[in-house]
Length: 208
Ligand code: ADP
Ligand code: ZN
Image (tube, rainbow, N blue to C red; front, side, top):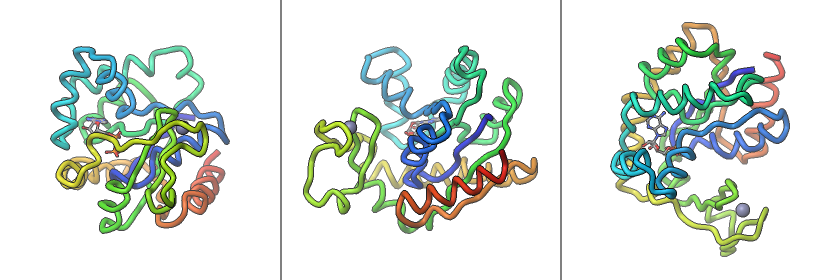
């Protein structure tokens, strides 16, 4: 099963992806995570990506498509994968169609006005978990692994505004792109992570 997770920044793709990976065993591939690992490792790709990520823009397609193509050619991806954060524009979607076969695209829908608060209140852990400050209630460590939580560098109001604009201009048209192919599954992403997860599972179960 080859799946795309689509949704605005803050829609909950990462949170849902880790729950889906656990339940169905899907291989989770996140381009954002790949870029952040490169930034941390000080690679050339990381240096380049950082300038775009800090500005809330997309990393150039040539770089991003190459990374994904390479990742999908690895043996573990042959049994299926779940893409989180790719494609992010129509060009990337067309490229993906040229080197891979997608079964469906799961779109997580969240009212636009909720996104800014969701992202600016987000705290993340090195283990991949993420939380909202309200739910943490003063806690500063990860419930799963105990490590100290932190705020992602691009989760500040200026960068978030730019990311949301980028989403509307470049990524949202993908909803129509996958709808036309008959591959779109849309789920209401407003609610607690567990509620949204239940909706996603029933959508997926209707397809597999
Ligand atoms: P979010 O979905 O919350 O914006 P991600 O971790 O998916 O977070 O992405 C963080 C940043 O990484 C994006 O704002 C963008 O700069 C870059 N990025 C991630 N995926 C892509 C992609 N497919 N194409 C171009 N840039 C990307
Ligand atoms: Zn953790």
